[in-house]
Amino acid sequence: MHRFFIPPEWIDQEGVVIKGKLVHQLRNVLRLTKGDRILVLDDSGLEYEVVLERVTRGYVEGMVYGVMRVADPRTKVTLYQALLKGEKFEFILQKCTELGVAGFVPMLCERCVVGHLKDNRVERWQRIVVEAAEQSGRGKLPALESVAPFQQACQSTKGFSLLAWEGEKAMGLGAALRSEIYRLRIISAKNLLSVNLFIGPEGGFTPSEVEFAQKCGIVPITLGSRVLRAETAGLVAATAILYECGDLDPLSSD
Image (cartoon, rainbow, N blue to C red):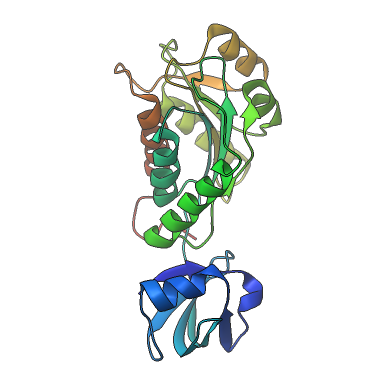
């Protein structure tokens, strides 16, 4: 069934009324009619099965026939990703949303090579996130923050934070994760891991940026002996984090 995120005010316990641009997609693109079933989500983690009862040019009405909670990863990964050229940043948004990343913070770093950001760029990014979340079965939309300068992004972080850097030779991602997981379990077995993951632009982070990040409590790590592309590193590291924490196993999510 097709899945759609809609405003929560369009849903009540028994019915759904859909308005706006989504009506065109349901009626003219997908050609759905009375009796067809869709799934709608209100960004709370709940998924509603809806049977369409009326499809008009102005609105679509349906009855709610079932509600279930959709599992998202327990581990919260926020990806602080430097802006990249072309469609590479959009690729990261799409694939990391599919994977289960909880949020994105786009960053402007010293070695970023990007032109003027168009006014509609953030709207396009948000559409990519929504479509990827619908396609991949997410119950909640990842947060998408405004573009921030690198120093501001570092200063805004709270909690466990890692920075992938090719200059780091000693501390690996696995060792850093296991150390933090052990620390959390000493405090309470119920603690869940949240990770702020910093990934640089095509040219990598500068030494001064790494030094600044360390002063903010962000830990440089290596992702191994191979040099990954900027659009690959975040996806690989986020996958490794979720795997290490068991979020790629069956029944591992809330």
